[in-house]
Length: 357
Ligand SMILES: [Mn+2]
Image (cartoon, rainbow, N blue to C red; front, side, top):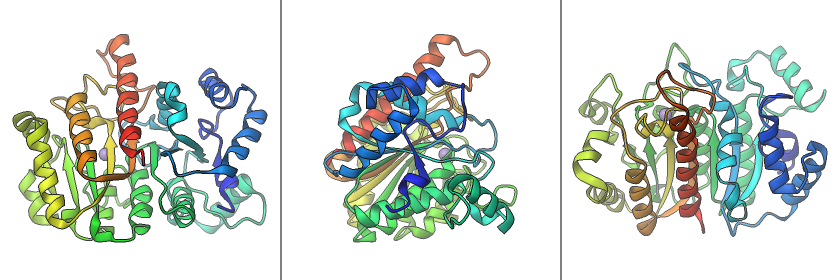
């Protein structure tokens, strides 16, 4: 945790801007720290980090969308989703935002000169710290889990590439990997090995996390409906079990859940990480996202499955990804756009609820 205050900034402050959404930041600072002034809020934020307790879930914002590729805008997810859960601010502890240079994705794509210049800009001349959002997230989470292996963390993105370091560090810190599984809500499989040559992005993160799981049976995908290949293809080539949106519509919440629970129980799974791409929900409820898709899940479907899961398994990690508040597709009226954010808030609240130790 030595570099925490360098790698992170105060909640909602991770998007590098002066005026955009200023009133939202001030509202957040006021609610958390009783002040609208960034400097005063920073002092209180740093102080709050001195007495971390794992008696409630921790929230971390990663406002990066450089791993997206169709419609950007999820960098504003962490600030806007927090507005929706302000009333519950005492139910969780907010660690703050990862500092984001919006043009970067992962340090492995950078040359030494660029890394040095970015280190100088973020941390000062002699630093060796990572500079890209995925690399910083990996470092921060590894440090946190080393010191607090029982921390239950909710990551708020950001595009879905961010789930890669979130899930990777969660898996690496489990005492018994064979008892840890992932439940992945999404309209898309995110199972490409590369997209246009890039291995870490919103369409590939799940493929890469397969190598960190005990077996590929330790992940189940729910809500899929936009895939170039059918369910059989993914099962036969990568060994990944999927419950498509149309299957959930047919089975209903309880039978869907029973299918999930049966697979996890046969493996001896005890704890689960829930990765939630907001586009798992039907476009009617999730218009504010980069790739909205029709015929999706209802908020009640997801809430039902998640709550049943929490009765039988410990939920020890989760994320809420791809909420892009300024993305406003044609034909969506203001009320539906507004309700898209409030639905994202509802889903986040449910994740916080099941993450409670
Ligand atoms: Mn996704």
